[in-house]
Length: 145
Image (cartoon, rainbow, N blue to C red; front, side, top):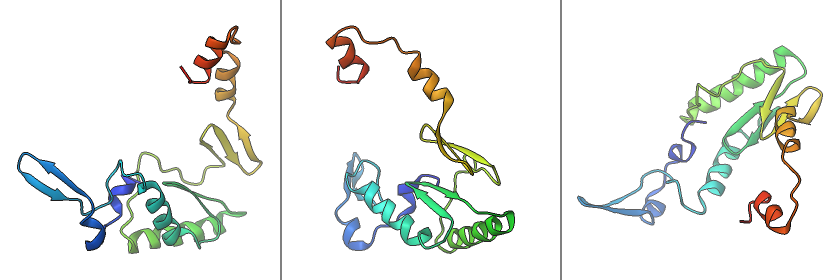
């Protein structure tokens, strides 16, 4: 989805909790702002409310992956998704849309009709890393330093 958090309207009560100051005055957010600790959870719940009951739709944060056994079934699922999106004014990122593909690269994996496998490009990158030779190098590799 495009600018996911901004698609969530805040009700009057919650909007009153999210103020910000500018040189021109104090304003409140009308939509869910980025940087709020609870924003990802609120966003995920809203996306699940909108699309979660559509069989064949898998929701991973702001990504929707549809899967079906046949092209006709896929088209029915996609039609339901698009109707719900229109009804709820959900906007998608056109640069990320992929239609009727057999495999999708996602979070370092490849999701396909064969299941879930590690993306060989990611594995190659990890395998090319030199083995840490000391505790300090290991900490650096693990991102602890």
